[in-house]
Length: 376
Image 1 (cartoon, rainbow, N blue to C red):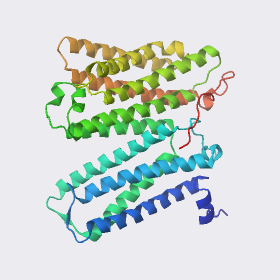
Image 2 (cartoon, rainbow, N blue to C red):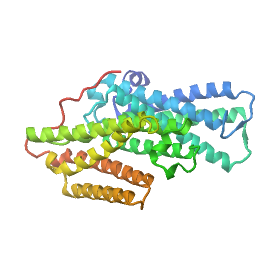
Image 3 (tube, rainbow, N blue to C red):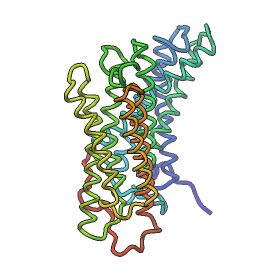
Image 4 (cartoon, helix red, strand yellow):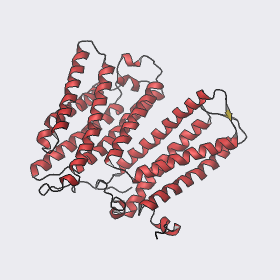
């Protein structure tokens, strides 16, 4: 008969098994609940609060959840590193990626979780505020609701951190980009920004520009993480294939660096640097797609054809822009969507290439060199 893990052993080895992971996530949620309800009672004391807006329950939940998500994610990663590689491997036989996160990967993913929580709760609070127009929330129920929301966020962030996989990283990236971009669009002071270009969201002095540029910078760092994940499991049988895999990894990482540079250099202040980064990102993507069959011969042909189709669509969009049929915003949005869709599918294919079905391919070597973990 199986017995549950004692609390004492759980505290000593919080990420040693699937059971301890779930229990540790609950403990993290309980700590977030306790801290949240205490702070909420102090902040809300003897007040009638609105659901959304400045000083509201929704604003408190969003800020508290962002902090909880960041702290919990980073804390869970520290626990994984402290437990060592053996404890970090697929809990009870479930394989995970062998790529171990560096400190800036953890920081970027933690910030992504925090901003997703912040913007997500703000959006939900705004929707609830409009659904219950004129409603007020009293101190005690407001504190309980806020604490529960913060605890749920901490629970989700902990499990996201300890079950991190290539696909979950790509999902975090896509969700973060969507949430950050829509937050910037909805908060833009110029409602006709779309008549210029996508980069015009980052040239104002309001919260819209901050949200847009910060989204691109953090997303760029996450893409460099994806570059390691996407290539780590690709099997190689020769030095030529190893070199090709490293070139693909370098190209993906450079796309991430250039994406961050697009946010670092706003188009109104650094026109040349901004355009070089944006154009370079597209050029590297096209070159990588065209050269992929030679760099990684094991790439499925269907995926290669998909990449060619995406490149063809981007070229057609560029022609439409030059002829005046499409404006630049439409071209940028579609190209942006195609590039990141390709990246997600690439992750799925490379993960499958390194899976059990390919174990018999010669002396295929997984990625074991050049990937190190920098401790926090």
